[in-house]
Amino acid sequence: MSEKNPYKYNGDTLVINEETNSNATKSVYIESYGCAMNFSDTEIVASILSENGYKTSNDMYEADLILVNTCSIREKAELTVRKRLQKFNKVRKVNGNLKVGVLGCMAERLKHKFLEEEKIVDMVVGPDAYKDLPNLLQEIEDGRSAVNVILSKDETYGDITPTRINSNGINAFISITRGCDNMCTFCVVPFTRGRERSRDPQSIIEELNDLNSKGYREITLLGQNVDSYLWYGGGLKKDYSKASEIQKASSINFAKLLEMCALTQPKIRIRFSTSNPQDMSLDVIKIMAKYENICNYIHLPVQSGSNSILKAMNRQHTREEYITLIENIYKIIPDCSISHDMISGFPNESEEDHKDTLSLMEKVKYSFGYMFKYSERPGTPAAKKLDDNIDEIIKSKRLSEIVELQQKHSLYRSKQFIGKTVEVLIEKESKKSNLNWAGRNQQNTTVVFPKKNYKIGDFVNVKINDCTSATLVGLATGYSKNN
Image (cartoon, rainbow, N blue to C red):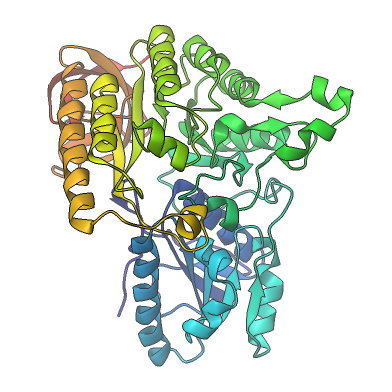
């Protein structure tokens, strides 16, 4: 009996690829939920375990170890993990020697409570403690529960080459920062992933070169807040003021790092995520415009269009500052695609606040977005100081209006591509037809077209002749110059 790994990212089901390790004596089955950083971390975990005698498996019933990499950003994500733990408990009844561990943000948030609440869990490991996995595994082999949720002051994993278990061999993540200093009142990230710290740029370039040598065509630079990247020799970003003048003079910010990556591998397409409006500088936008291999796409979460709600969220930007940033992006990169995060029903949100969000959306006309009802997260400033006082029916109604408007704008943006030729990186077979390829253009929009003689990993030019709100449809006219 076998069950495929059900975790998802960007709507695609990803199944762990079995890794060969001649020294492997045990197998590990891993599920990941939540943000791209979690999927990147899972590949780091797989690498650490591979060096310690484990191979990855897509069969939980045959695994010696099950790990679930968790997300705490919304209540729904945590409920999903708890249901999966119930499933693993059934698996343990079949395999009595099975060990189960919880990784990631839920592990950090709940810590020892996890062992008490979920009797199935043997091990709880926070996002910065994965290097300690061999020791923790020895603890549970010796019959003891194991917990390590200590947060680090350094990037932690810059010296580890991830095992690309989530990859199609074409796209890959490169982690460049960890943690967040922004303290948005609704967000658990500063508490589960710690303070901001950046990774040595040399190790980033080395990982980029390694991916190029293995045939990867596109990378995404990852961080909770990539625009806040700042390397001055190591340590927390908040301690930068204590750095020496020599360190400050030689420091590297995100604009410089982005340029280094673009110059180092001009044939690899580069994306980045996630940006924060308060930290995104015009220097970054200008670097994007300067290099063809940096994609014209920015995920720029705003969360609300109301200044009063933005203030209550402790967002360090106003509606007006955000709009000015958007206008500057379009001036420098006219064909840039912008997406958003939006929360409906934040505490004390009035109907007027909601209308401000809708009017902001009308102003920007985002290409797509990620939209959610407010979910109170224990331990956050909002949970401690604000009543979750918006009725769920009203939250749902407002969310529906946001989603409906976004669908309208997504179709509007898609239609702008009709008649144009775009560069597409072929990533996979189309879900709807095995006669078509699917990939993304520079603006991160999915493009579907007949296969012909092209293959996965090719850069091709596609002339767009039709679209939906989420997909462009066209015909390939030949390889792009970057192929």
